[in-house]
Length: 414
Ligand code: DI6
Ligand code: FE
Image (cartoon, rainbow, N blue to C red):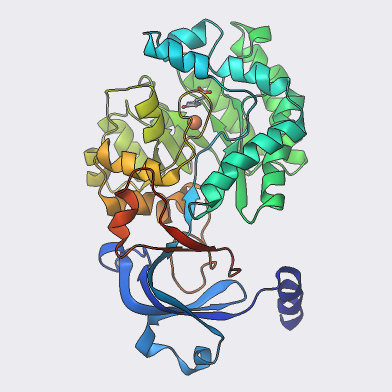
């Protein structure tokens, strides 16, 4: 134990630390609104939270640590963006213009634009250029206090490009102080060379690519797009069966443009999350509740596509389904690199309370990624923290286009 601790300390040059003079939004369930603790302190040891509570009650054991006065600022768990496609080639501003002129998202996709346009650009861009572009987007998120970013493949749709995307995603986690969680999304769209032959694509490309990416250590979870313009429930079943055989957790783009019973399908497979959900019905909500699957809401896509159908937030609440909020950062339906703005949109467009929006990018986002040691300020959790120039956590979802981050702490490193 001592040796392990020494090695870890040497590697990341972590110093144990006592943060003082702060207001905490711990986001612990059952701790009252936001799990607030006023005039608090946090003891950090070995990159983890050793203790947190009122400053007047710091145990003797932690009182001698080097102290850092936070000047009365607000501290929350660092934010977690649990659904992004932030590695991709090119951009789709022309498609944006076409949509504003009246073209529909599905019509553009069926005409060879949409996801497939980004597939062509991603295949044609080398890994270094993909990385340089993606780092800018990752840096924008990190600059808002984000400490975990989920990144999907799915713009390759051939074995080599799917692996290239996932390697780039992993590189981001090596080059920046951020934890990257990858999702294999080979079942995102049908590439043009397999036009009309979705099953052949799955058998010849998608499933072998999943196997190869998994063998290379590049996959943390498996995702799919269950939709009329993508894959049927039966096809997603096949993708998830393969994921299960590899021991990988699953999640699903479900009920975004229509209701195919995708959320219930995800729940049947014990999915970590079902994402989008504008067309989710009561039976789907009940299925998510039974399975403990997180409902991930993506207001950036709703906004960009000027959708009018709202996700059933009231039913999700009534059934006790945990709600996460993410950017869905991608070049088509959600060119959004601000998780704070996603929180604002979740409140203004979907009716989440500011507290639900913050739970959606902390505690529930961690759950959507299967990370048991993040998203709350509690003993044993990783010391991933965000320090804000704000007086109350409700301010985080309130402003539009303003970043109140003062400092981010990543695994105890400041
Ligand atoms: N739903 C989405 O919102 C993204 N993927 C998906 O399945 C959009 C991808 C894109 O338009 O490029
Ligand atoms: Fe998405």
